Length: 116
Image (cartoon, rainbow, N blue to C red; front, side, top):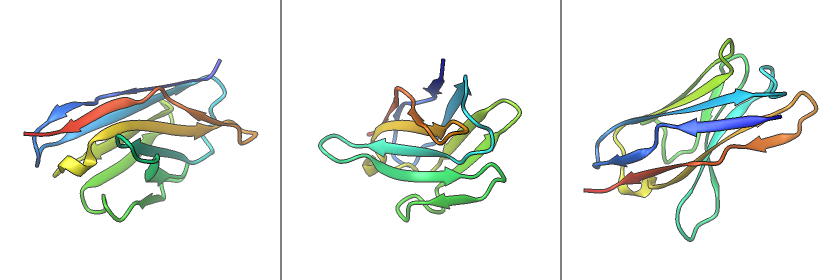
């Protein structure tokens, strides 16, 4: 059984920080890229950041310089350090990963709310 479990979301003031975690279990491949996506109310899900098994990263322009994606392959866990948070970062954050045969899986999401 495949599981992707996100944690670390919450309510934070503008300018604050949060660290999200995504713990993967089951047939998720440590050799495949993983990613964070987010969905704001009334908007489509959008890519936030991706990371390959070797640690190469890519970010949406809106989060460059503020967010850092990382992964611990030994623990099969991915992280998203979010600094200098803005109200427009509010949304449900999902992690995404793949099996060795490229079947994609999603976590249940964790809510991030940036508000004063």
